[in-house]
Amino acid sequence: MRKVISVRLKEDILREIDKQYKDMGLESRTEFIKKALEFYMKRRM
Image (tube, rainbow, N blue to C red; front, side, top):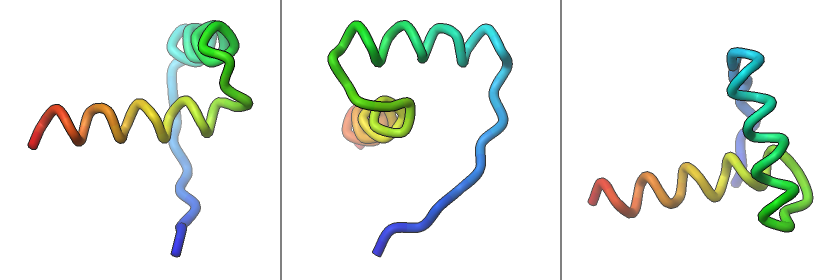
């Protein structure tokens, strides 16, 4: 089951996310953030 969360980000970080997800061929900010979190979690374990 998926949950919805709200995240506040500084505008400069959001602009960078917007550039990155498009460059990576992803469909949305949400997809980018999910992949970034998955990457982070895998690296931490």
